[in-house]
Amino acid sequence: MPWPPSSADFTELRRSLEWVYANSPYYTRLFDQSGVKPADLRDYDDFRARVPRTAKADLVENQRQHPPFGEFLAVPRERFGSLHTSPGPIFIPRLAEERGGTPVLKESIEAMGVLPGDVAHITLSYHIMPGGMRLHRAFEEAGCMVINGGTGSSRLQVEVARAWGATVYAGTPSFLANLGDTAREMGLDPRRDLKYRIGFSTAEALTPKLREELGATFGIELFDHCGEAQIGPLAGECRVHEGMHLHARDLFCEFLDPESGEPVSPGGTGEIVATQLGPRALPLVRYAPGDAFRLLADPCPCGDSSLRLVFVGQVGIIRKIKGVLVHPGQVQRVTSQYPELGRFQIVIDHPPGERYDRAVLRVATVGPLEDPEQLKELLQKQLKATILIQMDIELVAETDVPEAAGPPAFREAMVDQRGKSS
Ligand SMILES: [Zn+2]
Image (cartoon, rainbow, N blue to C red; front, side):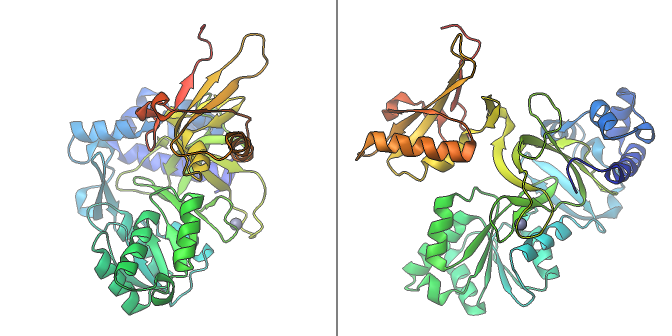
């Protein structure tokens, strides 16, 4: 769907909301408490102003109080086609006719250059969680022969991928790295003995370093893809590899400023808030998983006009610095390219009398440095190019940065001293 939404998008959204209001006890109550009748909503701005969000915590809490599915459920259980579970735990029933993200994934798979006849090796979990099954269905629909690899059993996976001549890998980049190591231990050459040409990378950050290493190991072209357990697959890279195209057509997606809640324009960074369209076993309205994306403003040279997104991180630790939303994960993607650098903190303050905020990256050195000044200069340049703001760099000892600042949680990575007198 386009962003901002058209009036036709809003009409489809309103139709879905009317169905949800009539069928899901949780939303009947929520709409009534908010004094909203979906049929009366005038336009998108009216919807945004009046319909409350649903946080992941609301869903977990309601399912705990009313086990197992909570009051969100909109159909009798006899109509379930399947049932998945995601960490929480959150129970996700699906109607037999719900496509479960298959069209979205199929579009992403095809944009990566996967062709009918490709042999796809899926290594996400098939147990309990939805990931493996979702990908399996989509690769089948794309005309591929699919190997249900699942997780673990690296040696067996290498043997199977080799025997069947798997041409597409789908799973986490770290497990692909593991398969490369395993193949070498088995006396194989990952590039010659395995035939992977396309990699569908998901469920983990695909860092530039990992992309390069795996490319060299396998001769594979990796494509980043993202989704979320409850709302399903969202966006994937095309062959241009600059951001992920938003392929979700069964979702009404909003991108909102995490601080003001106002819609962000292409070029800005916004939190995703998604409403499922069409009848669902467990419908979600204005579901906010807490993920922020930067929206790319330029049209993609590949010709696909859909919006392109770059994952920024979880909204809780994002800070606005000099008007730009910054997540420590973006900074880590830069620092992780230097083996001599460790964890870091970003100290933000607003010096009195100055017009702008000031940001200092205090990064720990964990190895010998050849030329500290040159390293600082290089870091500053790369940060300016990727997160779009100027940062001062301070190289410090590892003991000067708390462990809790480190990835993946980055709990103490942001030190905001604005508005605090020193
Ligand atoms: Zn593209």
